[in-house]
Length: 109
Picture 1 (cartoon, helix red, strand yellow):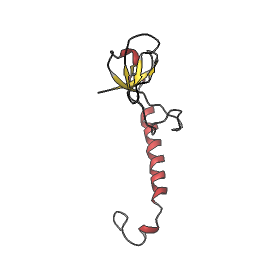
Picture 2 (picture 1 turned 180 degrees about the vertical axis):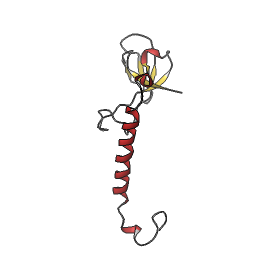
Picture 3 (picture 1 turned 180 degrees about the horizontal axis):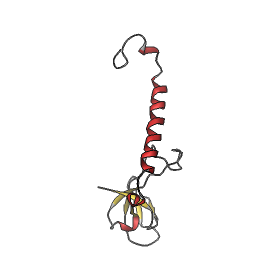
């Protein structure tokens, strides 16, 4: 059968295959990351940004339930000042927050 067509495909548990594929891909991602030298891990920080730049926090491994993780939704922020109590704001709702200059980020356009 091709592309899950036919009588057998209707009883096949595709979610099990999906879980197995995800576990395999996750293990390979971790292994491929670990092979990189330390110099490949240099990242942009909040302190590197100019006022007006947009970014997301650098994703880190975690439980995907609010304590890190790659599968969760990440908030988009904009740096609003260099220093001060509130130096960034969440683009979704304008809430002002403070991020430390050493926060690892991914700059976006």
